[in-house]
Image (tube, rainbow, N blue to C red; front, top):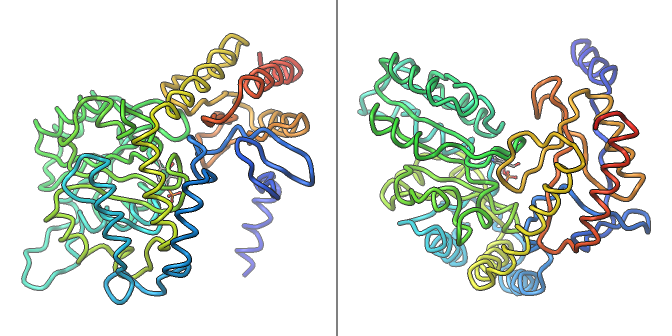
Amino acid sequence: MKYLKDLFDAHMSMDMYPDVRTIDDVPYPEFIIKDKRYICLCSNNYLGLSIHPEVKEAALEGVKRYGIGTCESRIIAGNMTVFEDLERTIAKFKNTDAAMVFATGFMTNIGVIPAIMDDFGLPGFPSIKNEDNLIIGDVLNHMSIIDGCRLSRAHLKSYLHKDMGHLESILERTKAKRKLIITDGVFSMDGDLAPLPKILELAKRYDAMVMIDDAHATGVIGENGRGTSEYFGVEGEVDWVMGTLSKAIGAIGGYLTGSFDLLQMLRMRTHSYIFSSGVPPEQACGIMAALKIIKEQPELRKRFWENVNHLKGGLKKAGFDIMDSETQIIPVLVGDERKCIEMARLLFDKGIIAPCLRWPAVPPGKSRIRCTTIATHTKPHIEYAIKTFYEIGKKLDII
Ligand SMILES: Cc1ncc(COP(=O)(O)O)c(C=O)c1O
């Protein structure tokens, strides 16, 4: 216990406990806290679908029909029609053979990566030694990928962020029999894109599998919102694509797409699928309604990108360093942790919610305010945000 008390004290002395805001109401793109309205500039609810009337209606119908949970794993007593409908809907949306859904994106990564790489000692199956099993990941991969890799018991190596020369040098030197290259499609903290075509070229040359985490790409990247594979014109070439239903889709859940047979195999092996309950049924109903809107209303995505570009352009012009963002994730680099915390607090005082992200979410010394927009932000919202960032940036000597 003393160890835990010391650990707690160490966290508190470093002021690690974040400024968590308690939100009373969520009329996106604003939040209400104690009767005051705030502009939400940090949500992944990119298209505002979590509160779309058609999505809410579909979820309510789902509650009436199925109740609010399955109370079992899919493979025991929790496999309702609505989950198979949802998997078919996601496969169609992603233009793939098949899809598999999970309770969250985190559960997808921590279940799927071990299920692909670890044979779990299957009786009669020739076991592969851990050191013959290699996962190579971008150093900035999301924590759920990192945890999934650790659970897989495979040998792990990282390549410098997007450095294809480094990735190739690892592939060249390894003698591992089974190799998986894994990367975020859109990097969740920096907002840049993985160089997917080059990764696929190297994977082919060195006989490696590729897995992409399209959490932040699903619904917004690519002409139809199908993600990074669509954006780069390489649909069907990535072995495994996972994503979340908790960002542009506006709900909760994770998915994996791939070939039908391989997904059937994973249904027999993925611990977070077998030993855990799935997405709640009313969420599945809401998700299908959200995917229908994404397909039928491309103007929503257009408005979203107009807002992204407006905010990005304004912050850049004001003199902020928004790193190499190529997408809707706009990191406003502050660097110094204390200054970044102060900036987030001053923004909050001025009616903007955009928290400070610091270690371990980003490397030490790279603290930042991570901004995102929503399709339903208005021009005045964005203009007010740019003006307020500018004033606070000047005050804190950041620009
Ligand atoms: C890149 C990435 N992968 C996976 C996840 C996990 O998704 P979920 O919130 O559905 O668990 C996130 C969420 O932050 C993410 O940003």
